[in-house]
Structures are given as structure tokens and as C-alpha cells.
Length: 109
Image 1 (cartoon, rainbow, N blue to C red):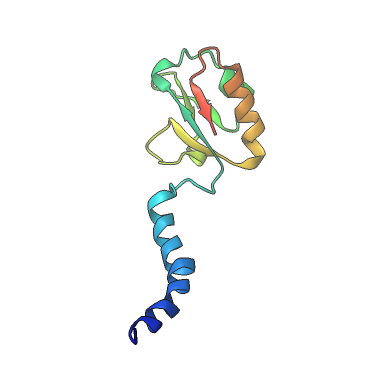
Image 2: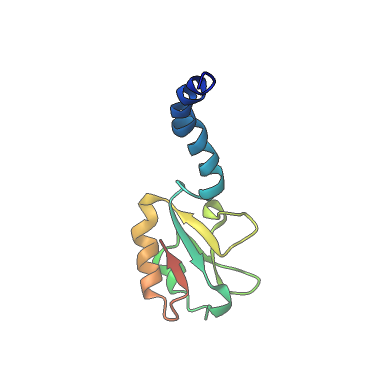
């Protein structure tokens, strides 16, 4: 029992400081806190333009394949045009664009 008092005294520090940091690194995606996550199933896009016309601050047409994409500023990974994080001031706009998509390939949340 003599050696346990030091371990028990350190337990609150471990539970409140060390463990949450370790869990955060494993469980929280990099985009977390950056805004509402948005994904586009680009292979199902029909290039109607409703998303980039409804919310041009977040969506644009890819010049190479004509499909919708997240503008570079809001992409989670710069090389992936299908995933982004919408800041709070664009969430309503992005949600409206997703709702108006005729093929329902834009997902947010």
C-alpha cells in the first residue's frame, strides 16, 4: 500500500489532462472545429450548377470534369475537392445548396 498513494494522487491529473489529449488525437478528425463537414459524391454529380449558383462562396465547378467541388479555401485536404468544412456564416447557404441538389449528392453535418 505504500507505493499506491503516489499513483492515486497522480490519477486525477491523468484523467483530466493526459487522457483527454491522447483521446483527442485519436478520435477527433483534423477538420473538427473548423466548421460543418460537407462531402460531395462527385461521381454522381450531373453538373446542373444549382450548388455553385446557390452558394458560390463554397461551391464551384471543376474546370476539368465540370463536376461540383468545394473551393480550395474550405477543403479539408487540399487535394480532395469533394470534402470541406463550411464556416458558421456559410452553413445556411451550404445547407440550402444541398437541399436543392436534384441528385442529393451533397451531405453535411
